[in-house]
Image (tube, rainbow over all chains, first blue to last red; front, side, top):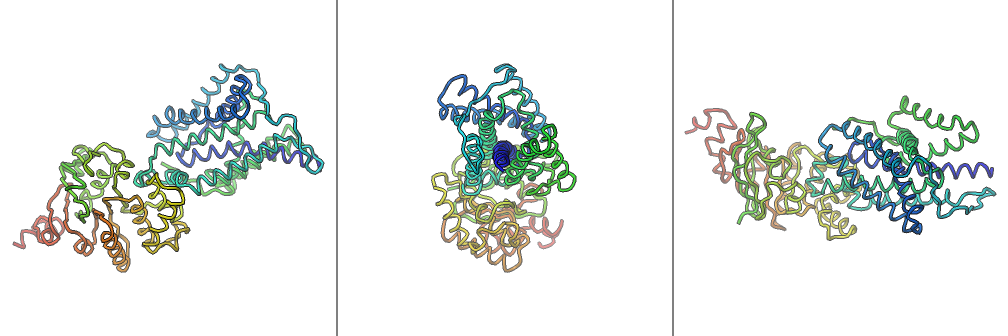
Length: 291
Length: 245
């Protein structure tokens, strides 16, 4: 039982990171119709922003985390200006290919800057364990789950309780009508990209101490976040959360109770099953083509 | 004193002149109707005024400022409001949230003030009971009223209404006219109304602009326009206007 609790919490922690990456993915998709294939590299940048601020610059961790997230917000704005704005009138597929290209550039920029040797990002709660029902839980894993829960609450408040968030949802639905409500559409779209980048940054900072910080870490994360959104429902925020937690849990529980060689099999098999039987996912609406 | 002054507005789509050299003025608080047969360029004209469609030529002055090149959201902030011919509410937002997107223009207010303001507007439209319903669950007539409420939430000086009575039943049209009249009694609100319901146009409008094939063919009081031969022939066919005289 103690083993199970430990695995369960670790699975939730990993799933939380996938969920955060998936939420960033969904926010950009809902607002702009763009499937961001650089989403994994966004998370990788988050981890390396942490490495740069904490390990390399040696900032104390609250300052380092804040600086890393500020850098991610700036990166989101830059991405909006350099990739999205110039391509916004072209077909959405062009923008999607653009995100693939930028993902490749990001990965190689990280390789140039940090080298291929993996780093270790130390958690502020390194080495501390909490006893839950006889199981020794790493305090970092518990923190990941708590931080993700808080963030989900904040995101919900933003989108459903503030005029800013309501405006972002309005822009996602009808850009022209949103302009006629006096909403500054470009500013709200830029905010969507910045928010996605910051969430990916938080995912990266939380993931760093659980994995090694490796410039190639982006693709596996993007695949898991993608699987999470398919299972939960493409474009749905609750779906991204549920899907992320499901993928994280099956990965860890599957590795322990079945075989670590097949740990990814279950999540992807479930994803394929959903694509065949219920392509709109658990919470999603039917996917429609958008202009 | 002119609130809106459009001069020589032209819009060309390839070889088609959707609008050609249309001049148009609206005074503060004035109620003007724009009528014309289908395809006359009425909606294009509203799109040019609101900035959704850039004009090929001409100038738009609003409240003393040249807004010809200004983006739509700036014009809305300056005091233009608009509803669409085919309802364009945000379907996945509640009634209250839809109105709040309009109210959010007042950046000096707090969230709770915006919420209270929006609820107050819904109350005056008799829609406060529907505030938390999904827009999709409303009747067609209610949706048009929510759209009007949302446009009013922007606090416009000039409200552009694109066929607000389309698809409404007689009772709902009466209700809409009563609301518009009441609104204009409470505040100085200029209105430009595009409408095919001539009863509504003749009763509400102080002045009527008639467009046909993108050109201004007549302008004047309801009585003048009704007896204008060019208008009669545009609506009823070539020669009808002349046969009357």
